[in-house]
Image (cartoon, rainbow, N blue to C red; front, side, top):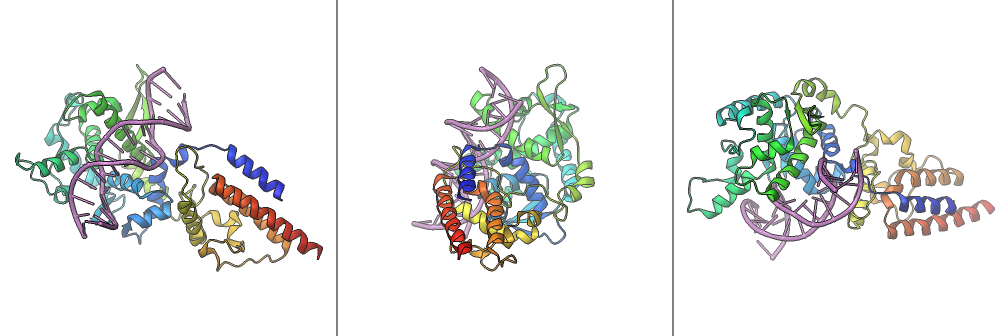
Length: 353
DNA sequence: GGCTCCCGCCACAAA
DNA sequence: TTTGTGGCGGGAGCC
């Protein structure tokens, strides 16, 4: 088996980082799948990050964008409440109304149009935008103006209020840049619009397409129909899941990531804690694995039904295949190789005796 | 080679 | 001072 393991280790090392599996779109789909259920109420950011196996920072991106269309609402520090897809149509109506008032029309998509400032978030930013003396508040104003939440709302307004069927991110960025047309600002804004577009695409609110004449990538508004019709099933936690963040790791940490064992361990622990709730359960075989002295803490209570050495060996191999990308940093894989070798020795001794 | 967008640094606010 | 929040842009994967 050590041969198998060492081959696995080698192949692991060969595997590369996959960007698609870490996308914000996929993350948001998993987020929605996680919380789109009847008993969902409060969402803790740490909890979400832990369950989805991502850094907290990414959860901020997700909730900020989702908040902009009313799926979640900020309750307080570290906490959001789940509003659900039912809240979206109403939120979009309000955004459309606002957008119309603010002049988000076809004519000013290529204008540097302003930014809305009449919303509940103002409370948390505590703005006094009319006070030029107040540099702190103007800083906040500036920050707010650049927030993902607001950018997201304005992006939606562009779709809702303009007659334009297709909107490119470039034109959106130009239209939404309130201050300058500085290329650096443009680049930054476009980056953020990519984030937002990915989230909305994964929710089927918009769809990526091309402008027929120029073949330039553009987005088309699909609206809430597919969201309200499919949303409940598409993101329903009772539905069979696709790969969920943190429950099945297929991505490797290579260049893009610092070596972070704690998150590896956290993900293992989370997986074991939640195995019974995941689709992975039946095929992983890992939940029946008896861990050795180095088992994840939460796994210790799981007992193996298959007590024979061969069964264990089989489980070990199943475990190796189930978890193999998890251990893809040199130190961890080296460690696994070491213990796999030791266990092989132990099993052969055991069989002989 | 340009497009796309993940990742995490770091500034700033809040506790 | 610590913790929470999230803007920002470098740079790497993708096409």
